[in-house]
Amino acid sequence: MSHEIRQLTPDDLALMEALSTMFGKAFDELETYTAKRPSAGYLRRLLGSDTFIALAAMKGEEVVGGIAGYEFRKFEQERSEIYIYDLAVAEAHRREGIATSLIEELKRIGAVRGAYVIFVQADTGVEDQPAIELYSRLGTREDVLHFDIAVGEEPVGT
Image (cartoon, rainbow, N blue to C red; front, side, top):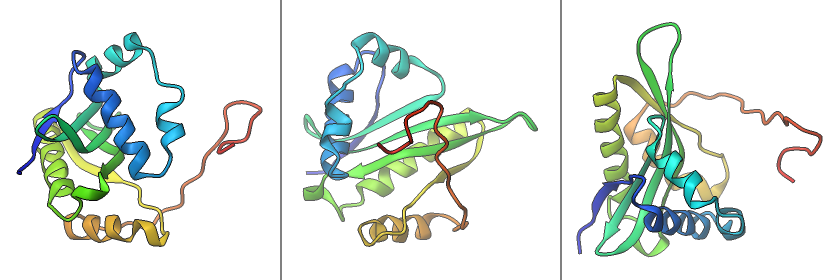
């Protein structure tokens, strides 16, 4: 069965929750993605925002992959960048071109919005090697450092 890519809207709350569950399973962080789900109102506002992009790869009624991304409008020029915050495909559906289809749809959306680049972070662990290989085929690698800076007393990552 082939897949289709769907951009989620404020009316797609059930699909957004299914997407979150799929991310949790794919990243082996189910509690992070499902234990404290946002309210329906929060999700509607997020999905209606012009800076958040959620794409679901569907096989029939099943969410088998997805992207959650953010558009950053630049101050130095009238253009934007799109950041892929999460990209995953359910384990049973990997190596079917779904991740590439998701990125291609995000590129199309980015072009319509006036974005000039999409960027994504990949961790260097063995579990992220397939993602690194995919991103290497689709873009240019840039080695950077990433820092999490806490905004409160509790350290980031606890």
